[in-house]
Image (tube, rainbow, N blue to C red; front, side):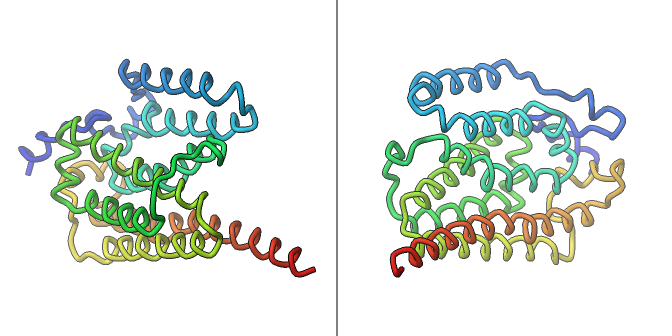
Length: 248
C-alpha cells in the first residue's frame, strides 16, 4: 500500500496533515495568469457595458481563488469529502455565477437543455468512478481535464437553464438533484473504501478512508441537492408570480 500512496501526484500537492494546512497556498503562476487574463477579458468585453453583472463575476473569481489557491486546494488531496465539496461548488455555485455574469442577451446558444442535463450527469458520474478519479490525482493534465470538463458541462447546463422555459428549467434542476443524490447514496452505502488516493491520507484528520468516503457521499446527497432545489424553487416562484399577474 505504501508504494501506491506515494505514487499519487495531485495538482494541489501532497496530502497535508492538520498542522501544516494553513501554510499550503497554491500560487501556481500559470493559474494566476489565467485568472487575471479572464478577469481583464471579462472587464473589457462585459463589465464596462454591464456593471450590474460585476457582483456575480467577482463572486465567481473569489470562489475560483478559494477552490484552487487557498489551503482548501491542498485539503482536497487529503480528503475525498473535501474533493466532493470542491466538485459541488464547481457545478452548483461557480458555474451559475459565471453564467449570471453575462447578460441574458449575450448568452451563447448552447443547445438542448435535455442534452446538457444528461451530459452533465454522465461527466459527473464518470469522474467519480474510482479508476478515473485515481488517474486525475496522478496526472496534472488529467486533473485539469476533470476540472474543466465538469465545469464546462455545468456552464452549458446553467446557460441552457437561463434560456429555457420555467417548467423545463425546474424539471431539469429536479432531474439533476435526483441523479446527484443517487450517486451520493451509492458512494455513502458502498461497503468498502473505493478511492485509493485517500487510503493513506485521512487518518491525520480523524477519519478512516470509508468514513471520509461516506461523508463525501452525504455531501453529494444532501447539501449539494440544496443548490438545485433552491434554484428550482426560485424559478418556480417567479413563474407562479408571472402566471398570477397574467391571470389578474
